[in-house]
Image (cartoon, rainbow, N blue to C red; front, side, top):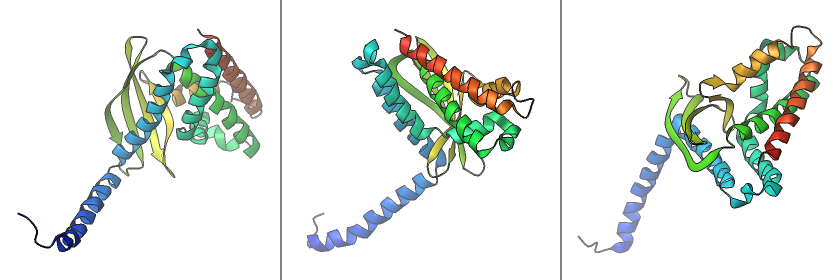
Length: 217
């Protein structure tokens, strides 16, 4: 049916369109799992695009490519939360300066380790196979499958909402990075003065992994 008064029809339709937009926005805002998944997907898609870049295959450009990937990873990883959860109860016995230096060293190790894990990416992208949300809706575990070196690897991302959705743990083939490192670190934290030893070892290990990544053909 043709409207006899086009201007009036547009005026009457406008509120309905606004209402539909508000409903859609409200529905999305009330779905934290979808928000977390989409935030993760945006970052992972960016990383995978870089890994698929022919320039990445050139060993001479690999270090620069890794730096670009690390920038993306840094934007979504909550390194301070990663650090606190990994150190565990001893975290509050660290001085503010030790917390800062450990977080910097551990962040470097996490970035290098994550790149090492996804180095065999085959260009197929990640499959998003589900989400698990906390009762409060402030934490979400996004489950993915990623083809690495011809094998489908389950990689799950535990995320929390702060100013935005951020990652505070990664589970690779059922193994939590936080728990794995916590087990290793507890052996070095039996004495009060071992914080400095731990910081030094983490920094050294990060350097080793980074060198291995850059040297890999």
